[in-house]
Image (cartoon, rainbow, N blue to C red; front, side):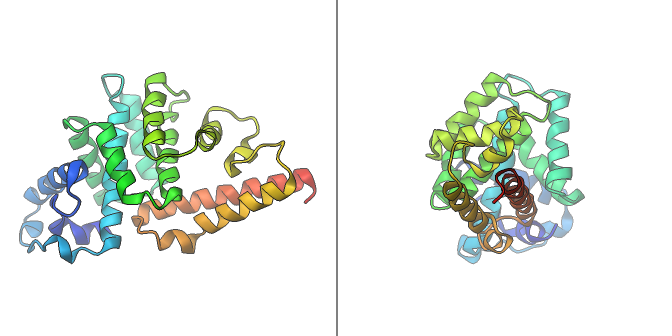
Length: 252
């Protein structure tokens, strides 16, 4: 399980604290109960977890906790929604069997937990408030999974919009992100977060910013779980493809 497997024995809730700690502790604790080897491990105290380890765990637990509440927003989780979650795990994140087991345990624990989507979003913001690219990446994940069946339910969109507000992201940025999934028009400009009416210098400046924010070397230093680093790398390729298409269109 890579980084996660190394952390299971020492991350039973106290490492994160708050709503995400409750979910992570319950999910990881259940897995430990089923694994005698895990039970033999000595639990370190919170101080022994590095800041990067805490950030990785926060991102992983928050992603599947928020996806659980998103899937449950209309009252029930359909087979199609669960299939889209599993496709995201396998195809977008390339999780191995053990990591998928962990992700599903977090998902189902959060699904029936008293904590709310807003609780998870707020704690995520508190951890990553100074890393807007990671806040945007989480919104991107929520959008991608919500439209996996071809449509975005109004109740799902309303919940995602609460996260946008909690993360203090500009509405224009959110609309650009959303347009990547709900509309094919002006797709390449939306990927870069610009408009076809913007001049070349504006588009170049935005492209360079995104390249800095999502470059593999930059992302690797942000404390993301390795599975989400791969997802961010896909986003980096998407940015490059969009820029190449706009370059060709504008003869840049």
